[in-house]
Length: 165
Image 1 (cartoon, rainbow, N blue to C red):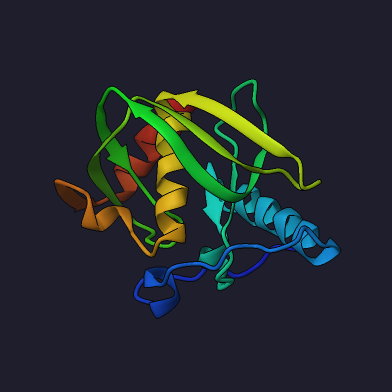
Image 2: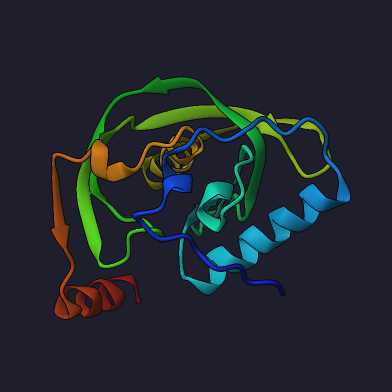
């Protein structure tokens, strides 16, 4: 298990556009594994490579549904439908949340760790996670999209954990 350090805002790397991955190499596969390990260690549901200081177009997502861990290289949004509005957080901006409007359902495509083309359709939290992580690849943080950003208190964190249990 290789847990990487998560880059925190403010850091210029979080505001830059990530580069396309040209080939799926053993190094790319190792980076995907490290990203997943880092996401799980931080109790996140998604992580983009720029969040660990690597400007490559790679994301990992696991919202705890039947899809399990989703690894995407060079992800793109194919379609987005409907609307949801709700709280969003980010491992790179600990202690804060923001109310963000996102598509209710999205379809994304990219490459998996074996270089095979894959497509996923997600709704609700999975749609939100896909869009949030792909935004990271374009140097966009949820705070620039949020209608309201607010600090999370210790009690709110406890209430969220109890609600998830």
